[in-house]
Image (cartoon, rainbow over all chains, first blue to last red; front, side, top):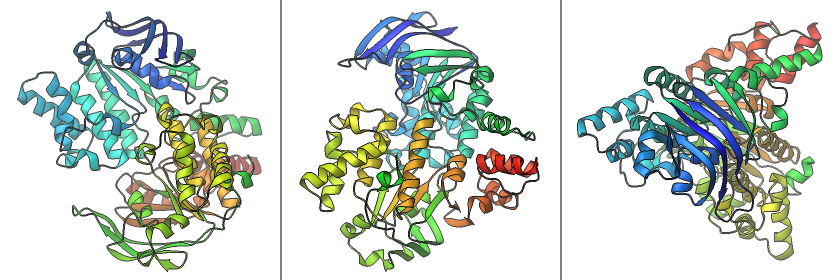
Amino acid sequence: MTIAFEGVRYGYAGARQPALDGIDLVLHSGSVLGVVGANESGKSTLCLVAAGLAPATIAGRLDGTVTIDGLSTAGARPYELAQRCGVLFQNPVTQLSGTASTVWEEVAFAPRNLGLALDDVVDRVELALADLGIGGLAARDPQRLSGGQAQLVALAGVIALRPPYLVLDEPTSQLDPRGTNLVSDILAGLVEATGAGILIVEHKTDLLARMANRIAVLETGRVVAEGPGKEVLADPRLEDWGISPPSGIRIARAAAAAGVSVPEVAA
Amino acid sequence: MSAAEAAGPGPRGVALACESVGFVYPDGTQALEAVDLAVAPGARVALVGQNGSGKSTLVRHFNGLLRATRGRVMVDGREVGVRHVAELARLVGVVFQNPDRQIFSGRVRAEVAFGARNVGLSGHALEERVVAALTTVGLESNIDDNPYDLGYSKRKLLALASILAMETPAVVLDEPTTGQDARGVARVQAIVAGLASAGRTVIAISHDMRFVAETFERVVVMRAGMVVLDGSPAEVFAEPSWPVLASTYLEPPLAARVGAAAGLGSTPSESSLIEGLAARA
């Protein structure tokens, strides 16, 4: 079971250059694929294309194929895509529906649209809120949250959808270190318990070092490296691609350059 | 980019201070308990703490967006309560966490010009200021673009440029590195250094402890609306402070933990760690 990109080129309507330019990439169920790259390298577009939102709702030209468990996104209906893949946008405020007056209703928005029984919706919402430690926000107005809170609420909405695949564009960018660790634990738990496949865009390579099975590096719309997470994060070209290696690797390299040894500490 | 280019020829910094500041939102949420903080003109201060600890609430007091429900907030030696918002806007520029709460123009040039025009610039001087600010953040080639055609990381830099163009004596940055790649983070570091070397006061909120340790001379840690640690990175990230950091779910940067494990004392930055290891070798 996979989301598979084959020879994918994607250009936004009116854009001179394609945002993605020949992508071959596979996300397997039960695994985490980390995506890194400099700003404007195509990471967010990759998310939109993986979930089929582009070109279905975001106008542009798709060449090649993206399939979710064999379903081509090009001809798929929105509900077929929503049943298979949940998406978290980079800016959580854009994600919030704007139709809900409470956080609880906001998180219920997506599962409700699946046409589930009310009891099931309630269970999913309560569980997602509890997992992310935001049960206390349930009665709050979604438009009056801090950046970090909005990001957790938006993620709760995706988790409550319980999709087989999750596509997450910098899900921890506005979170404090505790929230970041919480999200990585919950995502790891989802993969373990439900066999979900997760595509996650992150600048925090320390986080990817812990959770990504494989990592793909994007540069100007192309995959320039892809492989097991540990190997890719140790690639000496990482900084040339505009990516900061994990702290442990940075320190080990600086120490080696200075000719000194570094004691081991727990990550 | 030179320090002078980053900061422009603007005014020197101003002092910012809070005296027992408390703040309760209209819905009853107590965001600040009692904050005491004195920031000298030209200081470079990082404000850290978990989500909801009151960081963003606190900095909104410095330009009058919020008014303390208890205590006093001082800008340049005068209480903000007696100042007009327009006057505060000339003194303290605040770059919001979410650029989309700040950006409203249809062109990058107009967006950056808005604040600078409101502090009295026009004509050629205004255009020069706009170009300089965009060059500082690396968006000079985007001057005629629509802000919403830019990616999130560039919109963050655009919001920063709009405040830089006002050349306020104090600049507050709310999570400036969010969504930035390694080059973007380095650019923000250079901008902070440039502002500081021009004598401006800089306060930045961040969750990235490595960025904090490598960029600021002072770190203020907040927990539940109070300041719980306040000192240099070497002090705040030293081993004796770790329990307090842990009480608000913060971890020192890896360099500090490696330095402690090596018995080097406090090495909050990667360069201080490597220097410490080399000096001992």
